[in-house]
Image (spheres, rainbow, N blue to C red):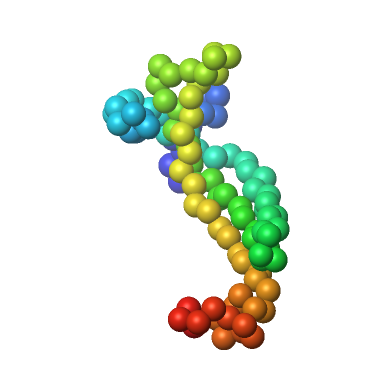
Length: 103
């Protein structure tokens, strides 16, 4: 088995490019996720529907030379969003009182 970690157990940095919100392409370093505690956010809507939402972090990149006002490095994440919906019967397709033309 090949081990590409250094003596301190660090994996070599993988350089990449990322596009900033202003369109500028900048250098970055891929940073793997070693641990994550991804919790659900529960949202109750005024129409009676309930949403459960969770972001699943796939990876991150540290943007070279960019920092927040406290001096912390800037990170961008790669993520997927998972959502489940629980709607009242009257909003469901085929439910009683469902909006016409949406079935």
